[in-house]
Image 1 (tube, rainbow, N blue to C red):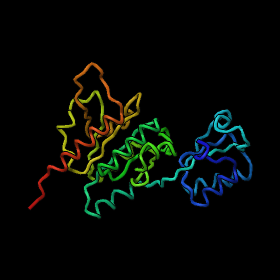
Image 2 (cartoon, one colour; image 1 turned 180 degrees about the vertical axis):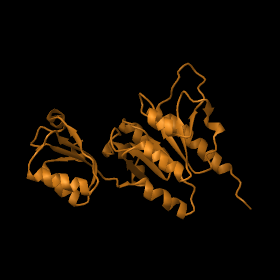
Image 3 (spheres, one colour; image 1 turned 30 degrees about the vertical axis):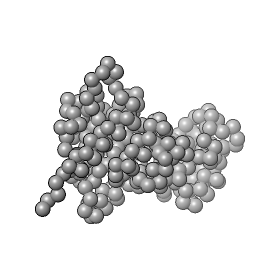
Length: 249
């Protein structure tokens, strides 16, 4: 973790001005002062949303003089989905996207991104808050795939789902409570697949906005799969379908 974060008002300001990608930034509640005002303006200018937390949380990151600010740095750049989608259509591609709703386990995230890059996912979409940090552990678990796949960080996933649908992209939410199996869905058209949190699954709001709920068949007594394994199975069904499509003559 030490290599992934910086602390102190001036070091964080300088990192942002140097073009470093901020994964997450934590600011002490009720922080005041002219240098913080400068930081606050820079955060607003760069559309970086801080997480306001009690000082005790910052002290868990470091016992050194953090001055009320701790920022986690990512070597991976972030993109916006509203920039990615038009570009894909302009290039004549069929958008193939993955949405990870509040996935918090770094190793699951890294493993999923590794699979996503292997199957040709155009972008992985994550929320600004409540997502696993994109740190050295995530990059290592992804076997470096995070350097080769676009990551979109969005403030509101439900709004993102709406945008995708308005762009002609179907959104399929993986849920154990679904009636439709993944084999009954057409993944050859523009689509996005949503995978949920390891414990609570997909949020109700995102689930409500999705076009359809889909599931994997479960034949054994264990009624759920690890999210990384489940995601891999769904993505490779999509790949199978894409490989069996007969091109128009």
